[in-house]
Length: 135
Image 1: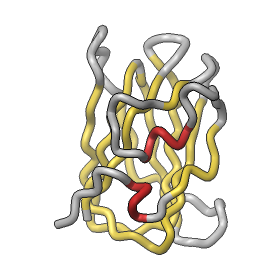
Image 2: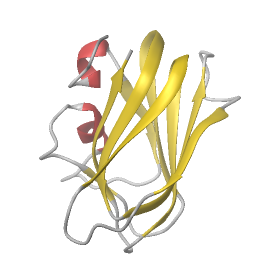
Image 3: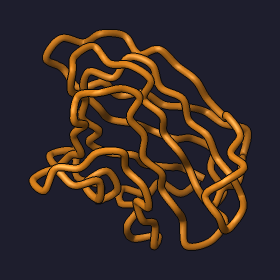
């Protein structure tokens, strides 16, 4: 089993984010540091897409965030950002003032892209601190 504290070390990139703040850029999602984060601009849905350097086996996805309510995770195995299929959907519990951390167990899937769609939040703004994967 492989745990990646930093998806950046795997050559992963955030190739799309629906909002951006120069103080909290989308790249913070994959730097492995839960003290840095990406923050939304207050409208929903919000989404971001991570591209791996090569097809990557994924058994577990862990998401550390604040104020996320409804989340859908999609994947694809193509070179383009199209033809996604849903692999997980979850409503997070509200944790006032505490970071949310949720593991999504998958049946050994493989992906070149992961798309995270935040359909709603518990506040106008949400933040994503880290996405990590285990294979």
